[in-house]
Amino acid sequence: MDAKPKANYKKTLRACYLGFITQAIAANFAPLLFLKLHNDYQIPLGLIALIPTAFFFTQLLVDIFCAHFVDRIGYRVCIVASEIFAALGLICLALLPELLPSPYAGIMISVVLYAIGSGLIEVLCSPIVEACPFENKEATMSLLHSFYCWGWLGVTLISSLLFTFIGIDNWRYVAVFWSIIPLYNIYNFATCPIEKLVDSGKGMSILQLFKTPLFWIAVVLMVCSGASELAMAQWASAFVESGLGFSKTVCDLVGPCLFAVTMGIARVFYGKFGEKVELTKFMIASGILCLICYGLASLSHNPIVALIGCIMCGFSVAIMWPGTLSISSKKIPRGGTAMFALLAMAGDLGGSIGPSLVGMLSQKAGDKLQHGLMFGAIFPLILIVFLILLKFVREKNKATDKKLPTSMDSPF
Image: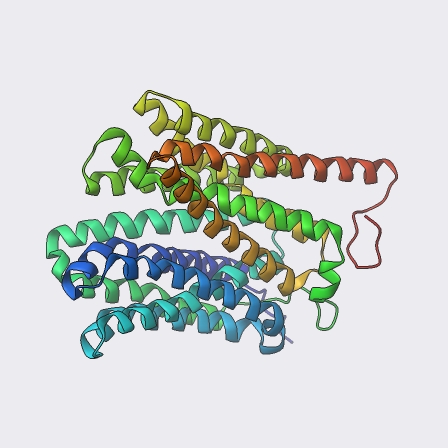
C-alpha cells in the first residue's frame, strides 16, 4: 500500500505570505486615492478621514468575531472567505461609487468588505503558520510578517507607477488589478494543508485567558507594538513634508516606503538569523533603538537626522508585533485562536491610539509634529519595561524549574 504523501507546508506558508500582501493592499491602496476621491466626488475631507477609521473599526469587530466563532466554523472556511472579501471589496471600490446614488456609500461599503478580509487574514495567518511543523517558529513568524512590509512597499510603488503611466483617472483599473492577488490566493488556501493550532475543546476560553497574568503582559506589549509602529508610520509622510519641504508625492514615497523597507529588512533578518538571537533580548534592544529613533525625530534640529530617525524607526518596530505573538504562543500554548484574535485586537487598538494621540498633541503644540512624536516615545518605553518584567519572571521560573502559567489555575 502506498504511503500517505507528506503534507506540503511550504504551500501553506506561500499562501500566508500572499495573505499578508493582500492585507497590505487592503490597508494602503485607498489612502493613495484620498485626494482623488475628494476632488472627483466632492466628498468633504472630514468624511474622507473616516475611511481609515471604518477600516480599522471593522478589523476590530472581526477580531472579536474570530475570538468567539472561528474554531466552530473552521480555519479553512474563514481564511478562504478572507480572500473572497478582500477581492470583492477591491472590485467594488472600482464599481460601486459609479453605480450607487451616493459615491461615498459605495466607497464605504467597499472598505468594509475588504476590511473584513484584512481582519480575518490578520487573525488567522499567524496561527495557521504557528500550527505548521516548522523548526524555528519565531524566525518563521518574523519572515511571515515581513511580507506585509513588502506588500505595503509594492502597492505604493506599483500603484504610483501605474497612475503615472495610465493616468490616475484610471485608478479603477488599478483597484481591479490588485484584486488578482486575493483571487489567486483563494485556490492556495483551499488546497494547502492547514493544521489545528489546538485540538478541539482543549483551547483556553476568553475567560481563562483573562485570568492568566501573562496574557495581560502580552496585551500591553501588543498595544505598545501597534502604537510604536503606526504613530510613526502614519505620520511619516507629513513629517517629511513639514520637515524637509519636499512635494507631497515625494513625501509619500520617501516617508512610508523607506519606513516599510527598513521594517521588512529587519523582519527578514530575524527570519534568517533569529535562531542565533534570544527573542526577548532582541525585542528589548529593538525597543531601545525605537526610543532613540523617536528622540532623533522629535528632538533633532537637523531635518536629515530627524528623517533618519523616522526611517530607522521601521527597523526598530519590526520585531515587536510578530515577536509578541511568538512569545505568547510559546508561553501560553493552549491560547488558541481566541488568544491570537484578542492580541490582534490589542495591536489594532494601539495602532489607532498612537497616531491619534500624536496628532492631537501636535495640534495642541501649535501644529508642531515633532512635539507630538516626542510623546510617541512613551510606547516603546512601556514596551521595554514590560519585556524586562517578562524576562525577570521567566528567569525566576527557570531558577525554580517551573514554567510560566498556561491555564487559569496556574500561579504567575
